[in-house]
Image 1 (tube, rainbow, N blue to C red):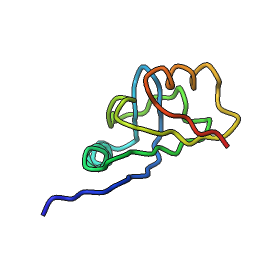
Image 2 (image 1 turned 90 degrees about the vertical axis):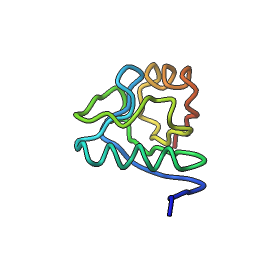
Image 3 (image 1 turned 180 degrees about the vertical axis):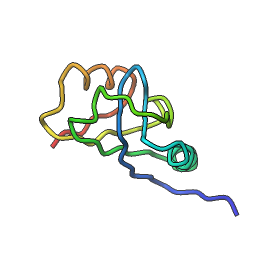
Image 4 (image 1 turned 30 degrees about the vertical axis):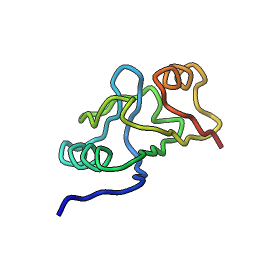
Length: 92
C-alpha cells in the first residue's frame, strides 16, 4: 500500500540555497525525501542555527519544500535567498 499524506512536517540539520535540505544520516535523508514526495505540502522547521548550514546527507533541493518555519534570529540574507527559490518563510 503506497503512503500518502496531505502534509509532512520535519526538522533537519541544515538548509541552504546551495546545498539544499540536509541531515546527519543517509537513511534518514532517504526516508525524508520519500515522505516529502508523497505529501501534498512539505513544512520544514529549522531554527536560525540550521540556516546556511550543510550536513552530511542531502535530502533534496530547497524547492522540494513549501514552507520554512524559523525563529526571528534567522539571517535575513539567507532567508531572502531561500525565498527567491520559492520557499515560503514563516518567522516567529
